[in-house]
Image (tube, rainbow, N blue to C red; front, side, top):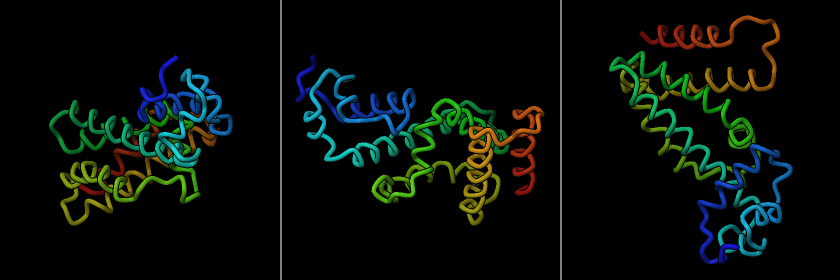
Length: 186
């Protein structure tokens, strides 16, 4: 059993995310998480004052991982603005599919107590906006980023919720929607 002083917030958040993905956010409890980590529940309070604090940290970590996945895809994309934006969109959608419950928690919570600090979120968006600026120019980059995020987020959430019932190749439909969006800024 790890000594509680050796427990760190990153490890707790990582295990909380895993527990949420396997059992759902409603089944996350500090007691269950402590058992999984091999410590007593009060040890977790050294790092998080409440379950809401833990969930806020999970949301921030999820957001950071989403941005990291997108930036990694951009780094590996061809040296072409449209290809980089396309890579961003596909990486975003892939992340949503790989982490559906923590993603839904991050973007689905109406509770202000669960939202990460807006300044931190803005900081995560700046590199993505920079990529968008290569297509749209700096003046339109924020609007273009917001539109791209709305397109990808909306598509992925409708997909996760089983809302696309009329058949067809959703991968092809997604690619066409992204390409049309990119073309609209060209």
